[in-house]
View 1 (tube, rainbow, N blue to C red):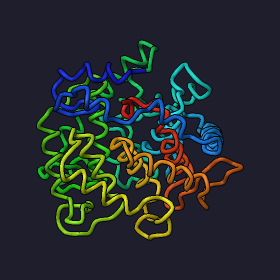
View 2: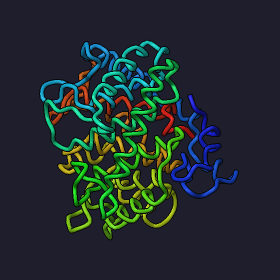
View 3: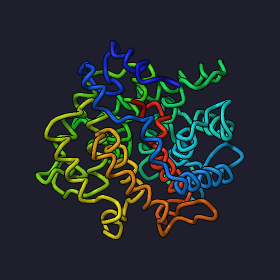
Length: 360
């Protein structure tokens, strides 16, 4: 597993860096970042029990071919990748941990569904396949340094390289990405999936052009509204919780860690602090997706943002009405329990600091 300093040592490669994008970090910058080791104490026994049961549920639900998801989302690239990332968030890696073999099987499944760099499943739902490609590329980049099997690692390297190239090659003129690779327009929701995948890949040593990152920054900033939130697209619309959380994290992933756009975005998100907004329609509509990014935004912001937000989302998830405590799963009626459970487990395990993209 990569340490934070190992990530920072790669800063000579053009493109993204783990913590500070294009700027260099001094000691003061390092000290101001969240302390991952201290944050581990924030996972309460009740939260750990929910995590343990959630991961056990996911392991039970994995299909023989390594895929996750049910119904029309069977084998979905995003759902499969998120389930594996949830296990990796608990320290389970290929050849290591209770669920190491489950992670490896998920990896082989994703690698088996690559078409000239495109990570896509042709069966089931085809809405927004670039979501799947983004989450799939993120998964491949996060697991890249954990694979010791040489033939598998070689195959992973070539697939990841091709997946990154597809993202870079299909950034549209606005500077973002949309549901399909060839789209003329863009939206913040799909864009965050791609820029996070690129950041993770760059952290793993893969080349990401600085021009791609710069265009993405301009696009995301152009989607910000006067209230500090982010619109779904540049042209009109209104700010909402999930897209605004995605917007802030997109800036972080592109190396923008300070400035009015970030501060205004964080202030906008704070009005949706868990425990106060659970029944608001715009929060409920994309509940797990929104909180997946909001928690990462607060983790990266650190300080009071993190210490106020995490206990609130932790307790809300553990006591959520869609959480089956006995069976271990969370339900999302728009997608699947596999998806919701993976998202919830990733959020709850952020203090573990195990995923490379979250390491400080």
